Length: 301
Image (cartoon, rainbow, N blue to C red):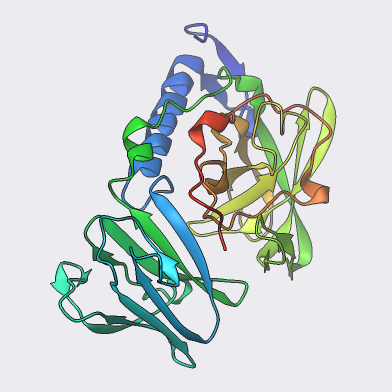
């Protein structure tokens, strides 16, 4: 526990930090983090990731299907037809598939990046179409997966106010499109970066390349010397407020660093920390990695 009533200068323009209030802020953040993981749209119920090429793919619990799902489902749920217009789901006659609680028999499934993505469901299963790096895939969830019911708690380092730092956004002359590798071999992402964030830890200056994100925030994928031994090997994620178009200062709080989805299952497409974002220092703050909180049902393919 943090020492009560202690104040430290730790924010922009010398703002003081009430450590009691800060500890509560971090504990609330951790609760929200767990709630998000456990939610129906969280990462813990993912049981399959199936990449699609033009053609037809059957789905069902029978082993003869192209995409095999748990035995709780119909032997053949239907098929995915992949063509120029995207992915169409055609449901097997007599099988109930729902879209927002309404039965469907033939429906085009826009990918998640369109803003019009849909989630179809059957029994305890649900699936949606994702697009990553121009490639389409079906992601399958099981709302009754036992992993969800037994999950937790998440492991963390002790809260350390010294890992809540003032960072300065050093903007590029123009935003850059950067190349980011993922845990899927050959799959890359191409986000926009406005620049690097610069900060100091224990008297040393460090930089991390940031990515533009929604809600006036910057997204950072970073690695450090705790990876593989104590934290997830591919790196961790952290957000910070965007100081604005002219750059400037904002708080970068490593106590809110967290593991990517692929720390928990084999069916995510997580970006990995680039060589330039791997720090030669221990960031012993935020979320740790526990291999017992990871599951695999076959391999992502």
